[in-house]
Every structure is written in C-alpha cells, then in structure tokens.
Image (cartoon, rainbow, N blue to C red):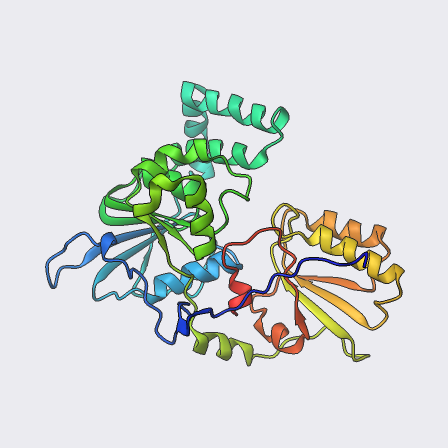
Length: 360
C-alpha cells in the first residue's frame, strides 16, 4: 500500500482511432502545414535557415539532424546555423550548408566586451539575470533573459531568407526573431513550456511575432494553449522525425556491455544528467528505498549521458550506497545497441515533450 502510485502509459508510435499519427515513418515529412509556406512559384526554391544552440550528442540534436536530412533540397536551399559547433557535420547531409558558428570568437571578444560594457540593454539584462537567480531563484528565466542579449551580441546573419526556424528556445528563438530577416519565422517547442519553469512574459513578444509555433507532441500543444489560447490558430503539432530504418541499422552495431558476470535485470536510461527535468535524483531515491527492502540484489541501473549535474549524481549514488547498483557510464555516441541489450528502458523525467529515446 505505501508504494502505490499513479501509472502513466506512453506509446510510441501513437495510434488515435486506428490512425498512425506519429512521424516516425520510412520517409518522414517535414513542413506538412501549408500555412508555413511562402508562396514560391513552381520551380523556385524556398531559402531556409535552421538555427540550433550547439552541436552535441542527445535527443534534441538527433531530432534536428533528422529534420534537416528529411528536407527536400530540390525544393529548399538549406542553411544551418549553430551558436556553437564542434568539428564535423554530425550526420547532416552534404548538400546542406553549415554556416560558421554565430558565437563571437576569442579574437573578437575584446571588442564585444567593450560593446557590452557600454550597452544599457545588456547591463540591464545582467541586473535582471542576477535578480532572477538570487531573489526569484529561477535560473531558467535568467537564461531566457541573457539569451536575448547573447543573440544581440552574436555574428550577423548571412542575408535574408524565406523561412527561418528556431529549432530550440533561448538563443535560437531570440536570434531568429530579433536578428534574422525572413518572411516567416517558426519556433519549435520541445518541452511542456508551462511545466518547465520558463517565463512566458520573457518570450511573449517573440510568440506574438512568430508565424507559427510548433509543438512536438499534442499534449504539450494543448498544455500551452490552455494557458495561452490566443495562439490557437498558429500552434501546430508535428512530432520529431525519426526514420525506423536508420534506428534499426544503428541498433545492429556492437557495444561494450558493462555487465557480463551475472544475468541481472537491467534498467537503462539515456538522458542528459540534470535533476530539474530528467528526475534522476528522485529515481535514485526510489532505488535507495528498494534496496532497503531487499529488492535490488539482481537489479542494475545503467545510465548513459552527461550533463551539468553529473558529479552531483555520482555523489548522490555514493551517499546512498548504490555504487554497485547504479552505473553511470558516460556519453555514448550511439546508445541504441545498449537499448537492445537492456531489459527495461527507464525514463524518470519530471516532464517531457516527446522524448526521442522512447521512439528509438
């Protein structure tokens, strides 16, 4: 009785009244909504700019790369712009142009620092950031505020576009809405905006001016519209793209499985390691209780990923005496073979939009 809890069941792909509504098809189709099109004549290409914060290994990046690669380059001239970018193309097809990152380089940083120190808007933003962190204890709102300034002090966009897409909130949203010249501007929203602790007032001007708001799940769209119904006509649902053939092919690769000496019941989490959204700390507390009840002798929990709370998570595991039960093994570029080996996919998130790991 004391462990009773509500259970929520999530299915991917999802079927509503017998109709497949997911976008994880052999040939997924971006830009399904005609409302987003700019009316180019037959044979003329739409010029697209897709903005993303930084190249990394993770679900949002997977969704972004799949979206870019599904675009028909016979119809679109596609530019991709990261704020930060490492080496390589991260799987992005060769006929898509990856622009130099928008971040001001170290060599240019002195001039940028002078501009910031003499900018009333930037200085006021810093004051608001400190107030949000110290007084309101809202780090996410502080990030929203300073990402606006980050967009102001990024490199100039390269020309004008028919459509500009901010595939994430924070910097991409502000850069697309306030720096980029485009006929239509689309904002992608991957999480439950209301539950994520984000401030609507900070981004309201951007939402008002956007041509479309795209939500990766119908539930997150409905949650947003329940709080802000005025956006109903330009709020769309489009699931993240994922091709089943690509996932199955990656799943056939070999992996170094961390458990061989015994046939354990294995839980697997593939996640950024943070507590605000992913809930790994509350999952650790549950494992602590289960061990106290003698229920974890043949159970192991493997965690793939990295993040800002990684060291804190490892300390928590040690403090709970679970170092032999919970095994954080760091980042893996291809986590899918581990899913094939594990018994249970474990997603303890506090809130999600449509997690790519579940679809994978």
